[in-house]
Length: 359
Ligand code: SF4
Image 1 (cartoon, protein in one colour):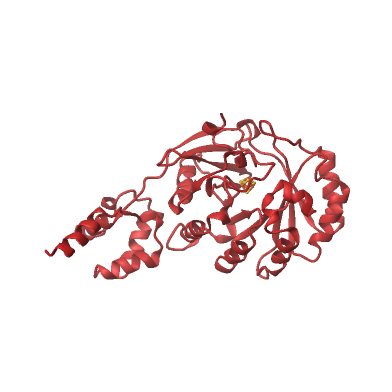
Image 2 (spheres, protein in one colour):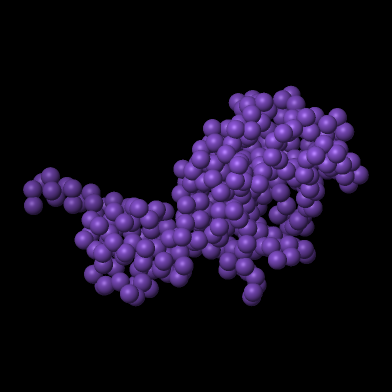
C-alpha cells in the first residue's frame, strides 16, 4: 500500500462512526448503492430502526451477516437516552433526559383525555432570553442533534402506562427550535416520513418566538406541520423586553410574515400569549391584539404564567384572563385558555430548567 493509500485507510479507520439515527433515507440509499446491495435494503434497515425498535445491527436478522458487518464498519446506533421521571398529581410526567456529554434536557408527557402530548426540547438551554421563561436563565449550552430530539420520543414511550400512546408532539420544551433548524428539520423528517416513525405531520407543532426567515423555511419544507408563534405583547416596546428577539424581528414584520405563510391548507396559525398580571393583560392589550390579528387565520392560546424562583412577574387573575378572552372572541378571534399542567413538578410551560443547573 502506498503511503498515500495507507494514510487514507488510516483516516477512514479513525473517522468516527456516523449515528444511523441521524440518517435520511436518501443517504442510506446512497450507501446501499455504493455497497452493491439491493436498493430495498435501505428501507429494510430503516424499518428495523424506527418501527421495530432495533438497538443493534445484529438484531436486523433478515440482513446478511456480511452486510451487517459492512454497516457496523460505517455506522453506530446510539442507545435511546436514559431518563428520570417525576409524576404530577394531574398525570403530567416530566422526564429529565440525560445526554451523552453530561448535559440534561427536559421533556414532558401531558395526558388530556384521549390525547397524550409530548413536549419536546430542541436545545440544551436557550439563547433567546425571554424574560418570563425559566429556561432563559440557563443561556444556551448547545443544540441537540436529530438523534437527541427523536430520542426523547423513545424515552417518553418507556414511561407510558399500558394502553397509553403519544398522539401529539409539540416543540415547546427547552430551546428555540428554529434556532437549531438543520437538526430540527432532520428530526422532523425522521418523525413524519413513512420510512421513519410515520407520525402524521398534522400532529406535530413547532413553536417559535418569531425567527421570521426560519418560519418561512419551515412551512415551505414541512407544509403540514403546525406553527405556533409566541407573541406575548401587542407593542414593540413591551415585546422588546419580554422577548428580545423582537428587536431583530419586530411585531409588524412578524405578523406580516404570518400573513404571507402558506396557510391555505392549514387551519390557522396559533399565537401563544402568556398572561402577566398588570403587564400585558389589560382590555386595551386585548383590543390591540384583535386589531393586529384582524383578517389572519389565527387562534390565540392564553396561557397562565407559571412562576419560577425569582420570576419578576405574577400570573394574571382568572377574571382578567377570561375578560381578555371575551374581548378576543367579540373581535371574532378563536381564543382558548390553557390551564396550567404539572405545576407541582415544575413541568409547566416556562418552568423547564434542568434541575442540576438551578443552583
Ligand atoms: S420562551 Fe422559548 S425561546 Fe424564549 S427563552 Fe424560553 S425556551 Fe427560549
